[in-house]
Amino acid sequence: MDCIFCKIVDGAIPAKKVYEDEKILAFYDISPAAPVHILVIPKEHIESVVDLRKENVEIVSYIFEKIRTIAKDFNLDESGFRVVTNCGDDAGQTVKHLHFHILGGRTMQWPPG
Ligand code: 5GP
Ligand code: ZN
Image 1 (tube, protein in one colour):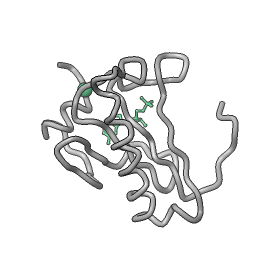
Image 2 (tube, rainbow, N blue to C red):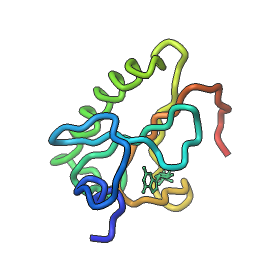
Image 3 (cartoon, rainbow, N blue to C red):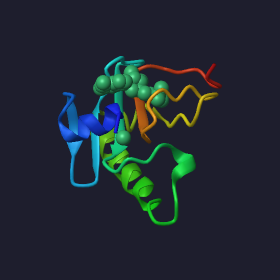
Image 4 (cartoon, protein in one colour):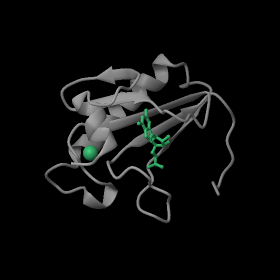
């Protein structure tokens, strides 16, 4: 499959890993949009939120549990941080493998552009 994030999971493309276990992987975004910019992905190829089903949706709560600990490890829990998942073309999803951006280390505007 021609998926960059599956290739990162397989080790075919290198990434600077922050956390890994049998179900998920967290790594630094190659083009950071904030002083801390980490991507958290399920190892299973799920295209986006739209493709979540009863059978695989529990991965999202698992990912959020890890987002909490990663945010703490990077001292973002007190300053604040943002979690984003872009879904589809209007949102600007460029990699069609479900991922959650953790963005922190600066103040941010809302709503985004
Ligand atoms: P999206 O726009 O789909 O929400 O986010 C995709 C993110 O993946 C972008 O922030 C982009 O910088 C990041 N990205 C794309 N290719 C690579 C890569 O090969 N390695 C890493 N670490 N990040 C990538
Ligand atoms: Zn994939």
